[in-house]
Image 1 (cartoon, rainbow, N blue to C red):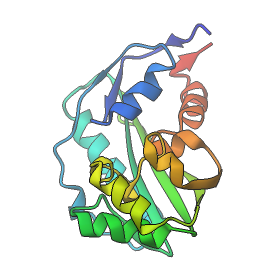
Image 2: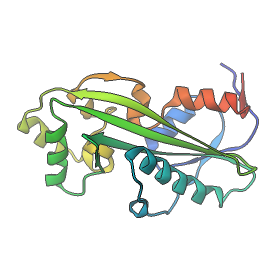
Image 3: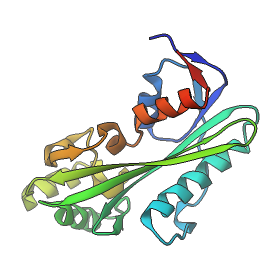
Image 4: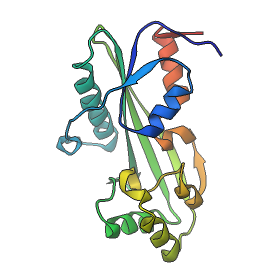
Length: 195
């Protein structure tokens, strides 16, 4: 598919997974990461929290590259209205996965697009994930692989975390961290891309 860009794009994310997904559109873009402190964000709901973190990161990068369209994102895992951040220790990673075992959780990704004129567009994509019953032995083996520590909720669906998933309702790429189909649809709607 031949996609034509109407602007220069910047991906405001250090995530190699987001970079791989955006690259599927075969459009040129550069990656510039933000240096903001995500934990400074306070919000009354998880939906507002993920939007505010994504806004903070995207706005920070937008100040560094005028005249370009900046796409930023933040992904969170929510279990029983509790945010499960990237685990900071082995014990916390095990705790996250034990909580998710045999349960449903929500994965929310906020996408922020800031155009060269400063116009901002924000949306949140939600995917529901059902985990299988996980044995402690499996959880510990996964945690000891080191994979959980840079991932919200303590697992990656695109790595061995896929072994935990019973089913998902919604966009798989959203769980990876970038709902590509919805981003593409919005970029077309905003006339930043044409086909």
